[in-house]
Structures are given as structure tokens and as C-alpha cells.
Length: 269
Image (tube, rainbow, N blue to C red):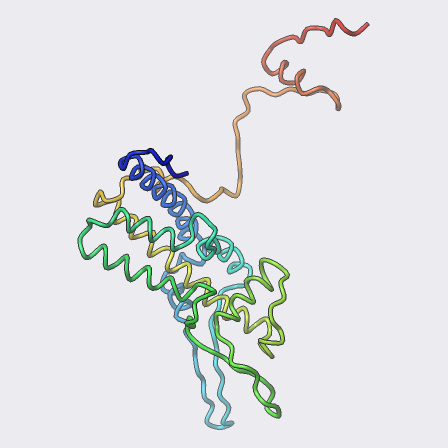
């Protein structure tokens, strides 16, 4: 919320700083959840997926050639996509543009090294937005040997068709426009998009860590250290418990736990 019109310049500056701090707190927690994901454990493999690494094999005897992509397991990518998706949504508090703007606020007096790194990160995020015209890495046309190829489709169109047509919603994924690009093709592009988002999120997180360590960003240490991933088993120490017949009013159960005997209702006979 912005300060009222008669607020001082100092009040307005404080409000801006407070807003940017809130963005970065939320981002750091979310980005650390990406960093903790199983697909991010092997950084080299994550980078290979983000580069869209492909293997081309040619068989001289048969004259056949094949292209092979090493992709993540679908269920694992589904969960990584859930953790990464908020960075791509302009209305989300951790949308990458808001995060880099917040970092820019705190790094405005930082050395060139940090500010240049921020500029590179900001530029690297933009091609991942659905509205940006750049591809992430490739364009594709497909069709049968005997028929004309379909329209040229960008990897980003395929990736968002997977994200919103196959994964998150049941949106029309543009089958007619995507002509022949089946779920495997859409998933391949989705893997390229999501692993790139994961790489950018971790890079941005590392910049926030550098800003914190050099005292340009002074957030609570707990933001960087608190546990951000739920345990697969939950155990709670029980000090008291009570049992009661089905239908017992909650107030009576709470009174029993508190060691209080409920007073009889005088309105009853």
C-alpha cells in the first residue's frame, strides 16, 4: 500500500523499500524450494537440459539418422514446474521482473560487478516470458513424408501448450496451430522452458545471497536458512489428549484438555 498523499519523501522511500523487501523474502523462499528440488541436485545435468542438449547418431550402413534428447522424468518435471511457474506470472508477487526490480533497488550503489550481473540476469529472464517473441532455443515444423509440413512453431509455443494444456489446466493447446506436435514434442519444449526457469531462479537467488553477504541487502538470516521443504514424515509430541463420543461439542473437549469441568447449562431442565 502506498503512503497517503501528504506523506513525506522519507515515508514514501520507506514504503518502496518495504515493498521490495517483501518481494525478495517471498522470492528467496520460493527459489530455495527450486534449488532443493531433486532435478536441481545434479547441476551439470540441469544445465544440459536447459541447453537443450541433443545427440545426433548416423548409421552409415542403413543411412538412417536419429536425434535423441535426454529429458527429465515427466512426474519430476511436473513438480519442478509447479515450483517454477510463479516466476513467469506477471500478477504473482515473485514474478521475475518484480524480483530483479527489487534487487536493482538495493544494488543501485553496489559495485559494477554486482550491477552487471543483475543486468545479465534480467536480460536472461525475458526470453522465457510467453509474450516475448524470442525462442528459447529452436523452432520446429513437422508432418508426414508424403504431405507438406505444418506451420513453423517456436519452442516457447510448444512449451506453454504443454504447461497450460497438458499440465496445469485443460486449455486448448492449439492442436491445429501446432500441427503434428504431439505430447512428446510439447513435453520436450516444456522441459527446456522449466529447466531454464530453474537455472535463472537459482542464479537470481545466488545474486541475492551475494547482495546479502556484502550488506547491500539486509534481510533476516532466517530467510536464507529456514527449512523450505516439507519432511516426508511428520511427528508431533503429544502432551495431552482426550476422547469423547461422536457429537460432543468442541467446547467440552477443549475444557477437558484444559482440565476445566464445564458448568451445567441452567437453561436446560
